Image (cartoon, rainbow, N blue to C red):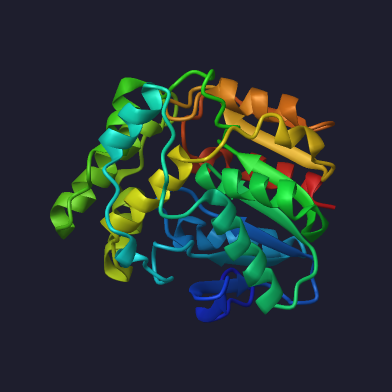
Amino acid sequence: MINGVSHSDPAKVKVNNSIEIVYDTFGKTSGPPILLIMGLGEQMISWDEEFCAELANRGYWVIRFDNRDIGLSTKLDEAGIPDIPTLIQALMLGGGIQPPYTLGNMAEDAVGLLDALGIETAHVVGISMGGMIAQEMAINFPKRLRTLTSIMSSTENPKLPPPKPEAMSILVTPFPMDREGYLEYSIQTSRVLNGPVFPVDAARVTERASKFFDRGLCLMGTARQLAAVLGSDCRQERLQSVTVPSLVIHGDADPLVPVECGIETANSIPGAELLIIKGIGHGVPLAVVPQVIEAIVRHAV
């Protein structure tokens, strides 16, 4: 039990032919399901238990999961390690790249999880890369979504502003694989991404990073996920066909996915609602969690 809400043990299902996805749930299965999709290199526990429990307290059956190549889900090490700087250079020169898999494949994983759980339709909430995966679901599997919430994400239009240099360096610099180095890296990364208004809670970051380390880091998997992001086509035009009720949430101080990316996402989806939260960067500080939850609950009806 978490804050009076039932919390299942982690379980594993096979999806998309051969991918094993690890997930857990919060709340009663009788509630409307809400699927939470995490971002690049992030494990499902990045959706804090308290966040999930609060959504469950609002009546939802909450499902979070490890994307492929991260956490306890299937690792595709046979696909090798993409050379991220080379891929970025190819894109800057106008060339295309062939990632080991696509965001579309990851969207198929998420739909496969819904299938395995016997869920016909769900509210879908994705953050950062998870928002991109959720958008792919809305484009390719519209009948499976009740609503879409895209947080801190993008259409991946190459004309949009790029990350700030200090945020870009996080993408191209491998993280340390020793515990002490990884914990320090996590704090420094949070200081770059957090934005100038909300201070970094170093103790909270360290606690989360410790849990990540103990569950198992996957440097190669993170690189493959990033290759999937870099190798994706712009969704701006495809999003214009989306009829799923959509909410876009973004911070105006995001150094990794600039706020213009969220604005374009909302403008690309007919009838989408846009919520810009002042002062937040690429993350959801505890101080604004209640605002984000209220926005999701108001939307996911």
